[in-house]
Length: 335
Image (tube, rainbow, N blue to C red; front, side, top):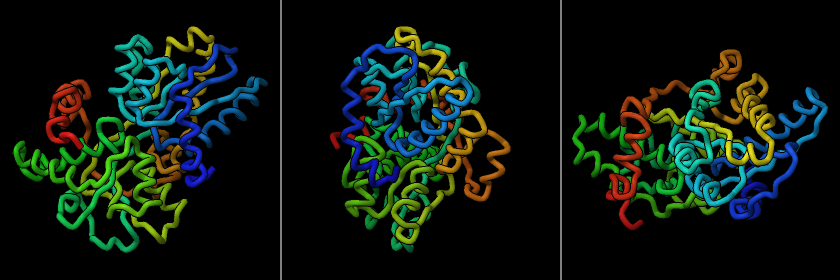
């Protein structure tokens, strides 16, 4: 299924957010995922269903729900019966832990901190890069309009905020007043904040708003492939932040529905060579060494910093930047 078809289907898919599933036999899963992962999981699901049937003889159904990662977490706490989550931010799974939906040791249930693949915030510009956008510093110029989602509702945008902050801290030698001024200018250059990454893609690609879209590297590749590589250029900044894509079983749901084994098999598939190959082909960076070697020419070298190194970990980042009344609220204001 293409970006265009899935954009048109977005409203229908969003209905899953408010419609809890009826209890059923363990031959069906709901994967609640972040906003821009629709195409990826359409392909993963088709491959997993075929693989699972070949191995077990059982036919299964995998349903999808997509929205901003934080919005998905709230929906689950409010009753959406997702068996698994494939999010783009650790704090959103931790919110499910606090709500009693996910085990506190979820990060130990799967390899690589329960993150089967990763990406980084990158830039997509109009063909020919008419504004000559090369790095984060170009995004605060008066003549540049930037598109990315609302960091209060989108994990994608929170990574953008953290990456821009990491860049500014280096550029201004840790001068927090100048860092805050930089982030304030960046926010001021965003004409519209959509609630999720796919909304921002629509704003930039279909409505023609903005000079640069900031989103996960995988999304920039997918947009260029779908809408025409002659229409857009991909720009990798000098430094970005490691964006992990954590996964977890929603214990409260699988225990009630008897779907734990299927849920585990599904998430395990994301680590299998076949799953890693699908993920890499969709523009995500993977951990499997053999698959990584297959796709090495697809991913430019980039210096990646981590949330742990720059911000002291997600708990501290949440407290200092994303909690109510914290740094993000002060800089973001009433936009």
